[in-house]
Amino acid sequence: MLKIYFAILFLLTSCVETAIIGGGGLAVLHSREKTLTQTKSDVIIASTLASKLIANKLKIPNNFVDTTVYEGRVLLTGIVDSASKAKLAQDLSWQVEGVAEVIDELVVCETCKIGAGSTIQAFADSLITTEIETKLFLAKKVRSFNFTVNTVQKTAYIIGIAYSPEEQKLVLKIASQVKGVKKVVNHIILADDLRRNQQ
Figure 1 (tube, rainbow, N blue to C red):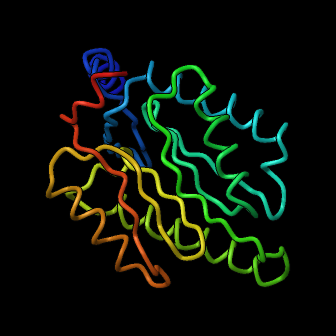
Figure 2 (cartoon, rainbow, N blue to C red):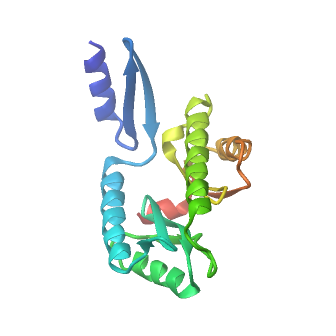
């Protein structure tokens, strides 16, 4: 009976994705503001862009561009060794069909070299990201599935959709209080943002 109920709920939920996380006979219902069609489009954009970045040597040490795609909004993070490489990453992003916005948060560091220190920092960044995502998931007033976090050199970048200014502020507050976070960069928009109608 429970399966039928959730199946009906899923079919009726046309404007959000629905995920059911169950364990021990219990189920927790989480919703995402993104539709299944938008998610499919984002996956295609991300994979197409990744191929372009690899072909242009922007997925290698000293020039590693990470991408996060949310409803056609592409967030570029990572470290490159020149401004021209950052510009190339932007241009490649705009070449992909379906991209509505490109947000460049790439760090240009001409003197940065990959070594033990940078590997340790990358690991520390991944731990920060995991902790932020966990705290968002556990927060009662946050729809955590609507947010994506990426951390580079202790700076946490957050992109996604908030249902209210209060939820947005709470997400940013939670992220800023995680140990090791130096700065939080906000790329969250509200659910009624006019940019979403352009998708």
